Image (tube, rainbow, N blue to C red; front, top):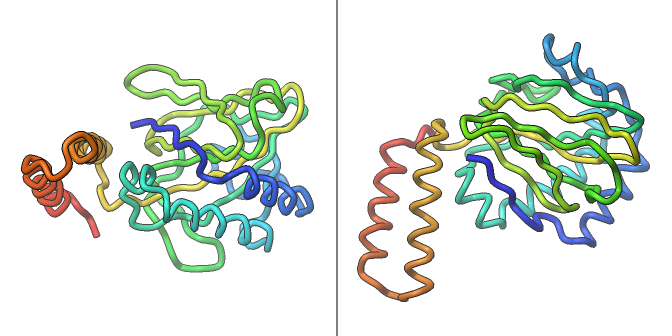
Length: 226
């Protein structure tokens, strides 16, 4: 499942985050790349333990903890602390896949990367190129979202970032370990949750909604990996 989640951050939060990030120290993006990715990656990043990354990362995670669409789609067990990248002057990231396991810097804590997420801080009008291109079983998707919006997609997907030929592309990226490891099962639960919400909206207190909610929770019990 590939899902755009609008307005994760509001305009004031985006402006505050950009101000913090633009004043931070940036380093070569290869510092967080695996062996394969390091040969293909041309961008700048903020070090994981930098105070700016921690402050804006906490802002993002707080917002997501209150975002019903994200919770329904991701069914998150834990999130990798958000990272931040910047592309400009022709920089790009050629086709790659993400590491299956990520370790949080300076800790022994690891998460399984079931889902990848990119949150945009610059709008499409601010730069040319820079599309996040994701390949899945339904084809190739070109993603370039408004500031404050987030794209969520399976971490198993091959993806790349096209060269930025004008302006600057500023984003956060991170991974989620879901309670439901399998993408197909997560998608079924997401569709079922949406159907239940639609019934409750159209016909409040309809008895079918109670039965379907029971089915939903029983499937979560069957599939959850917690």
